[in-house]
Length: 58
Image (tube, rainbow, N blue to C red):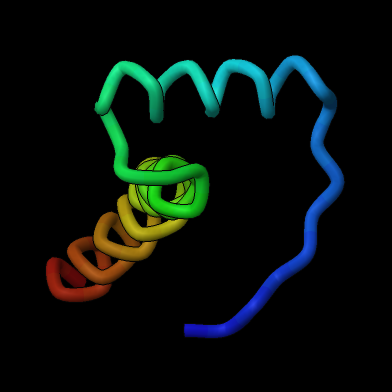
């Protein structure tokens, strides 16, 4: 994995810590990875699949 530094509002960190305390995620990093994965899945990967399907139909 690669290290990425980001600046986040304090409220985001507080809420990430709350998710960790609730044992939804083992740590902040994992929660952020899941959030980024879900964003990419929705915003990019889905779009790529749609374009691929459209090309296959042509």
